[in-house]
Length: 269
Length: 295
Image (cartoon, rainbow over all chains, first blue to last red; front, side, top):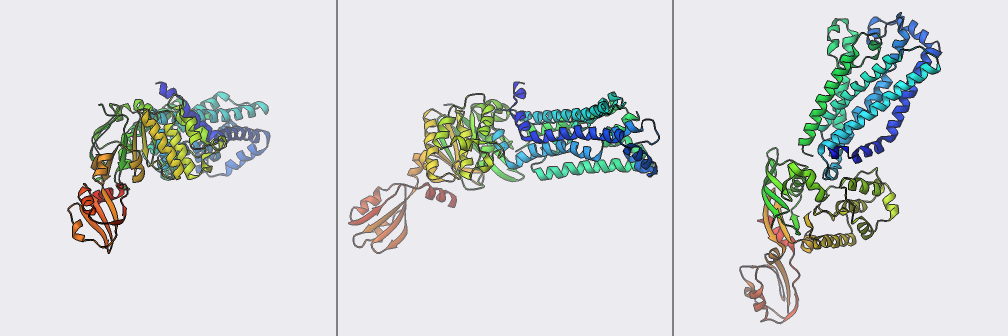
């Protein structure tokens, strides 16, 4: 147990990634702040509302925002949490970190020294995952702080508790993505291949989600889409139970994390 | 005497191809063991099995009397390892790397300063990132990280790769110093000169099989020795036709022989002649080694 608290590897991860983490935190904070300011301090919000009325229904289905609703601005604020730029920023860590620190280290043979020190192999997986947990915590704190600052400075009335819930759902969702990536990484020994596999899996899942949202005839498949586990706009509209999303995300996380741990302990390096 | 390393019928297969097959080998405390073989013979596979980086297909490895696959964490507290294909964290500085690796061992890096000064590492060198190091400097840093915490068992896979002769000597001296303190050294190499210099016992491996296991002194006795004789006048070739002698080169007044085993009959024959010169160097493992491989 003591070894799992040994912080050397964990500290190295933060040392390696310090600028990226800082950048992502500042990006999250400033993006959400600017998003709120754009929506509420300019006419862009009204313009977007009018423009959205002109869009075909399937596009609106994909975005998930319902025009004409009283909650339109709250929905748009929540959309900031699932904006493609934000999705990319958030997906950066779970995709790249396991590929670099598991498959990459096997490929580079840096594990040949590290794993002949008196540490449990599982420690690498546990601390890597713990590092991602802290990164996501920091990122979602950044996102929420941006929304909070924006609503406070521009005196906007937003139900902030919903945004706390969105952050919780997002945090759990991205943890599950990290666990899936970790599992992919422990089965591989090349960083490039691992990245390709993880990105391909995520792109396929995202396309699947996009298609079933755009085509109303496939609506019955929505409950089986991975990306439905993080739908900030639908949380605002209370169309999805946030508790279920969190629970399923955590279940996926636990399953893939255990697979990663078992495989990494048994594999050849 | 209880062995430090005990390979018990260890095999490792990559698909159907054997990396190492049915290896039985014991290494004793305070011994310097040289593990010899050409590329792809199974040296690195054996070392990686011992260090729990590979799982054996069958068999067990005991280090300090404990099964490696079960007790590797306890065992690794006493091991210093230098892999053959050395890769370091290039974005760290030298000192940061040494601290990072030493941090897992929870004892003071006892020999760090001695090794740094022996290998002539300046504080400025240590402060630089490893990516700016030359190949030789990286190798020296790898050696320092392996030895700095005074391990009881030192495992080195071709440690002198990339070192200049001066630094090779520094390493040999330090290994001999550690041996004098009762440390055990497992040393893989295809550099026979260094094995002759520092090892007590040698194992030869070929195509995944241990083909010879000898004390270095015994091996030297079995060695093929080359003798270059320059006669003052002519000689009779039939004088030198013996079972353990092969004529390598025969010219008027000059003869080169390869002798294996007892040299006394040859010396007796030579006493009948007047010689201008006789060259009889120390036996080379290289030739003995090649003999094993040819067979």
